[in-house]
Amino acid sequence: MKVNYTIIEIREKIKDWNKQGLSVGFVPTMGYLHTGHLSLIEAAKRENDKVVVSIFVNPTQFSPNEDLEKYPRNFEKDKLLCEQNGVDILFFPTEQEIYPNKNLINIDINKLDNNLCGRLRIGHFNGVCLIVLKLFNIIKPTNAYFGKKDFQQLQIIKNMVKDFNIDINIIGMPIIREKNGLALSSRNSYLSKEEFEDASIINKSLQKAKYSLENGETDIKKIISNIENSILQKLTAKIDYIEIVDTKNLQKVDKIDCEVLISVAVFIGKTRLIDNIVIQNNM
Image (cartoon, rainbow, N blue to C red; front, side, top):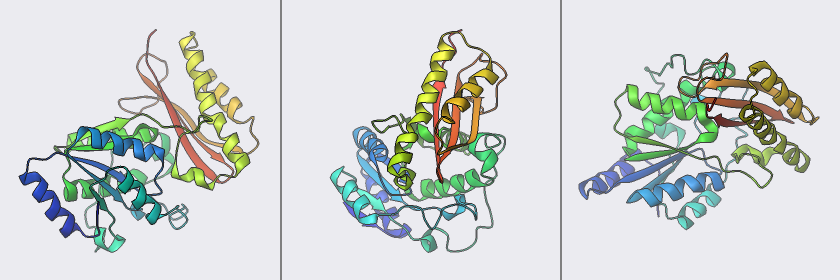
């Protein structure tokens, strides 16, 4: 495995692969890799000739009051995991390499970021799209892999690729979970032992909501209230949002007459965690 630090060197290697007609699978990450990331790498390796992983903690998607400086980092461990899992190139640029000057042109998202995390983290997905678009232009992969835990991010990137006519396949991969059901996240490392166990209530509440819907419950306010009551059984929990939206446009629904996403963001202690579940409309 090669570690590339500059845009010039990774572009040269990608050009060589392109000349050979090789497909490239790309997994963009912010590092502190876990089993969820490794599932994306595994899929990329299975479906492509070559695999590139990027590690870049992107400052443009953090607001001033968020955890940019405290975001967990462990490059040596990440490098080892990439080597062990068959990555061909690990792209590890500096902030100066990616943002040498202040961008004069940015991305403004229409409608898809006015609910869920986008409603509370103003500008977050503008920053996500900016870095993803930059990485796509640098690496020009055949396929790019994203986890469905960040469902809003996945849908926004799919629409960005479609709207900008970018010739890349965006592949969403299933949520990978801890044994207690907690969705894997780099931020799980912030949790104490007690908080880690309490955090299992998030997925349990979503599963109860799914069961309720599948057994005929149609009152959205009641479904949300039940999720809220379930989560707040844990004293460490504070709800950021609970929303039910159409999976296609991410807009709130008044009734379950389409495929919907039940999405939650919850603080366990000081750690903000997100999770979701997709419900098919079988009624």
